[in-house]
Length: 80
Image 1 (spheres, rainbow, N blue to C red):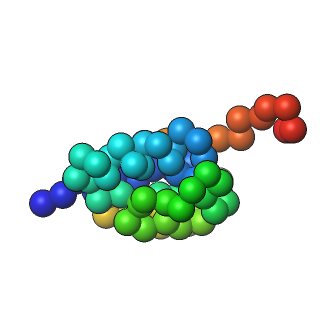
Image 2 (tube, rainbow, N blue to C red; image 1 turned 90 degrees about the vertical axis):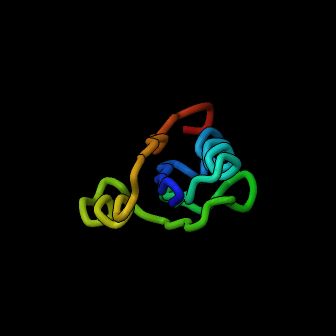
């Protein structure tokens, strides 16, 4: 049975690379972000737009997963 992983921040630069990395290794992946993928279409098996500041959205994101990788953050930068 495949390991089921959750990647938060999956629409961002680091998160979308981790999704591809996990998929190449045979994981089933759910990607979650507050916005659609910014760099390329997602490789995730599922992609959900959720606000992880809301408890109900956190419960929805984490349902039926074995591992969670958190890259959800407001990173700032020049335009922040």
